[in-house]
Length: 336
Ligand code: 1CP
Image 1: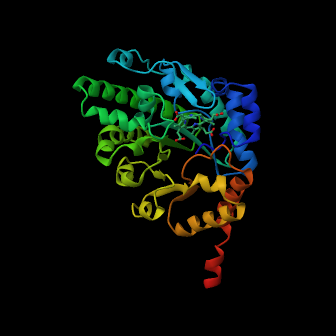
Image 2: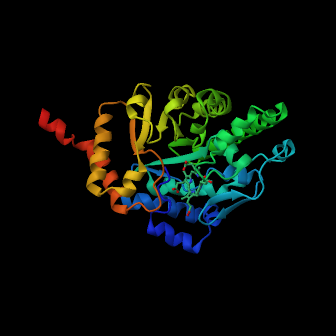
Image 3: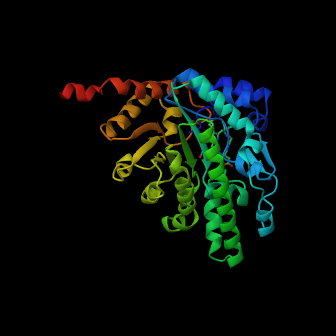
């Protein structure tokens, strides 16, 4: 999840001095910002500071960061010609800053934490390239694009499929480079996958993720697939072949458990933002109790940390999870 984000004062201090795009492409800043949450909270994993839109940026799309909104492309993909003009990336040449940062992070954290690399799923990244803004809730653009396929000309559908296939190949190359640079696992963010129905997902997202996962299998590095609104897509998530399914907070863990697959998630980040530290401890403990004895569970939030989250609540979450490794929950102790 987005662990640095805007919640940390030390992150905001760096952002006051440097633009987001500059931060994305400067190894020293990537390393520093990636380490900030870990220094403070000592979670078990460090996710590298980067963005899912790095691939299309390096394929030739002009990316700018609009303050208060997020990263945006100046011109979206509209025609087959636009898709054709996208270049293939060579990670060592096009994003050496990221690979340098990953190697440095590996050295700094040694084996004291897992180092996570990531990429967006082809569907989610394509949604941004084709439609741009997904910020307003009524504009779930992934849905709009797929909805328009019903009336779309065949060649539009083909163009989107060519784009998805292109992105799939780039994602494979990009994640392989991150693996070579030393990451322990990679997470694929299909943040907008949940806006598709199960039938649409089977056509527009799952096959491309499957291809990425199959290509990474020989490396032996575990893959994690995150979908925010994942409730109706759990079977498809498993069938992509990923090692871990990471579910949003609206998906009951009880449902995910039935899939007999390693699970990551899923405390509602709003709890961290609104509740007291005691309430955070209680809700976190409830989640841990629910997953007790489930083999292959990674405690996490169901989406990124929200910007105004009190730091003591993040600390309460991490401490409760870490304590759980060595102490049994109170209720279980008493019942023995
Ligand atoms: O916190 C970290 O440093 C972890 C690295 C990280 C990750 C894993 C960042 C840095 N972004 C991401 C993934 C990412 N980026 C996703 C998938 C996860 C999710 O669903 O949240 C998405 C959708 C993006 C795109 C993005 N980047 C948006 C959404 C834009 C939109 O229109 O929907 C935004 C606002 C960003 C900015 C961003 N990326 C990362 C950070 C720390 C920030 C905030 C920057 C700031 O305001 O200072």
